[in-house]
Image 1 (cartoon, rainbow, N blue to C red):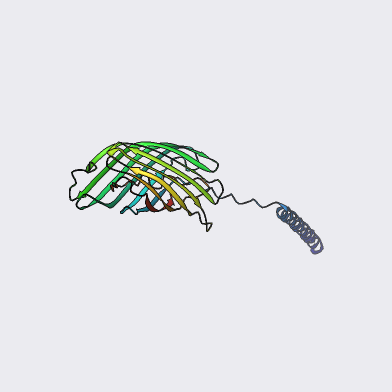
Image 2: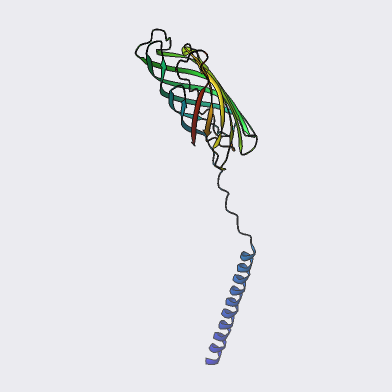
Length: 263
């Protein structure tokens, strides 16, 4: 009887050992197969979309005018895509001009709200916009011969073009006209990225004026306009002061700086 139970027990042990060995073999095969499977590549990070920029800057001329400005440009579908553009712009400054017997000092503010469309191409963008412009000019002492005094609201149209012929060069053109005091502003800039930082330095030439005066300006600029992707437009949507100049006055020397911050 004891031999029979021992025989049966030994058979069970052999069966258990065989089953355990099979499990070990199966686990080994699964492990080797898993090791041979390629690892799943991590999902690529989504590309950052730039929806516009907040920009600011200063503008100085030798005709004794100084202005500071700030604006925001918004593209609902992203700045890399052609389409709708919404912008707001504010400008404030002061100026002086010489009358027949005394010096006049002026202060002014100007603001825009524009809607437009931009066509984006490989190395630049062309934007056209229309909207409303508000201006307020205060001159001390009061100058009866100066028609650009007080507050006015008018219709404004503006266009700008910027192109990067190469990653290190910039061509920028802007022109605007407002029915408020018949104000106009036009500027052309060439730039070169000396430090490879996206800040372009170079010459500028333009003209500006209103019901009271016309000015020609020659100078230099520093413009933080990114080369790729197309991201910035409209630094200074019209830095036109009301500083009056006499006929034959030499062109104003100007220094401009603008800096965008992506949204």
